Length: 507
Image (cartoon, rainbow, N blue to C red; front, side, top):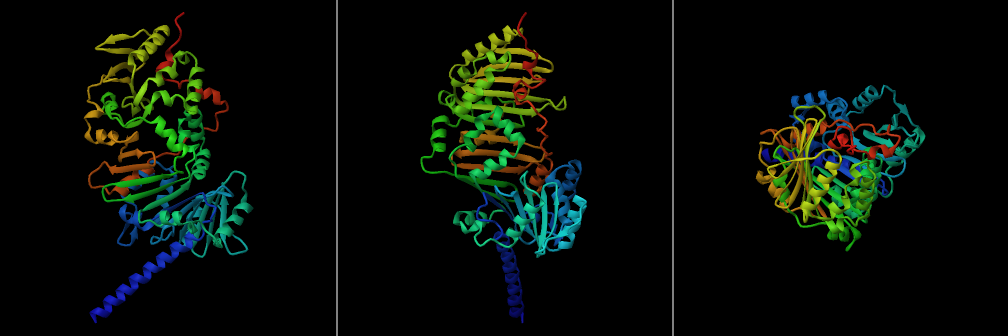
C-alpha cells in the first residue's frame, strides 16, 4: 500500500514537472528566429529564494514592500508590487526577447488566472481590453501592447514609429508560434535552458540597439567615447548566467568574437597588467570604484580617445591642459572613486588615481594651469592643496600613483588598500568595478578580455541574497529625462558646482 502511494506521488510530481516543462517550451516557441536577444527568468526560483513565495502563498516581505513604497516610480518596484495579484503563473519561466522590427522588447509569461491579470493591467492603464478577430484580448497604451490568449501574457514595447495595428499584427504572429524560433540555434538554446536563475543571449547588434534607445547612453557615448570599444567592435554576442545562492548572486558572462578578432587585438595592445596599487590612494569610505589598466602610449592612439582629447581641448580654460600628454604617461591602472557627500545632499566626494611614468610632469601641468587661473596652491606634507567651496582638493603621488582628491573633510580613515577583499578583487583583472550600496556590495571584473564575472552579496547578515538584490534593484529610480537638452555642445562644459567652475584667468 505504501509503495502504491509513493509511486502515485512520484507520478504526480513527474506529471507536474512535465506540465511546467511543456509550458516553458510553448513560450520558447513564440520567440522568433530573428530575435537579437533572449533572456529566460526562472520565476519559481526567484520567488522561492526571495521569500516572496512561502507555503504556496505569495506575499511581499515587509522590508521589500517598504522600499517599493519609498520608490513608487520604480518600474521593477511596480511589477514586484503587483505580482502577488497579477495572475502570473508561479511554476513556469518567463522570457524576454528583443527585435529590431515592430517591438523593441517583448515579455511572455504563462498565466494561472487571466482574469486577475486583466484587472491589474486595466487598473494600471485605465483602459478596457479589446478583442482581436483571432481571439487575442489586448490593450495598447503609451507604446506598450498587453495581449492575452490561452493563458499566455505577451507584453511588448514598440519602436517609436509603430502604431496599434502594427503592434497587434506582430503579436498575432508570435502567439501563432513561428515555424522556426530562436531556440532552433543550438548555442541560444543551450544558453537559455541552463540551470541558472537568469540566462541571457544577446547579439552585438541587440546590445547596440538597446543602448541607443537610451538618451543617457547616447550622452555618455558622446562625452566618453571609450565605451564604444565594446559596442562598436566585431564582438558577435554575449552570453550571461546569473546564479542565485543563499548568500550571494553570481554573474558569469562570455564575450563571443571571431578568433584574432579586432576586439581581441585592440584590448591586447591597449590593456596593461592588472595592478591593485591604486587602492593606496583611495580612501576607504569610497562607495564606488571603477578602474581600467592601460598602456598609455597605445591608449591615446585609439580613435575614441583622440575624440575625447579633442573635445577636452575645446573646453574653456581647462582645455589648456595637454590631456593627451598626460594620458600618454599612464602605464597601469587609472581609477575613479566616489561617495555621496554625507553633509550636502546631491554633492559627491571623489578621487582620481593613476599609475604614471612621469607624475612630476602632470603635477607641473596642473599646478601651472591652476596658478594661471588664480589658484596658486599651498604645499603641505608633499601634497598640492587647493580650496574650493566646501571641498579640499589635494594632488599628490604615492608609489608612482598620482592622485587628485576632492573631499569636504580632512581624511582620517584608512585606505582601500587595507581592505583585503578589494585588494584581491582588483589584483587579477585589467578592468573592474565595485559598488557598496545600502543593501549589498556588487563587483564586476574582466578576468580576461573574453570573460566577465560579478558578485552581489547582501549587507545585512541573514538576509537572503535574492531578497537583498531585489531590494537594491527596486531602490533604483528611473533615469532622468535628457531629451530637453537641445544643444549637445552645452553638455561639454564642466558641470556647475565643480572646482573648475570657479577658475578664471588672472586679470
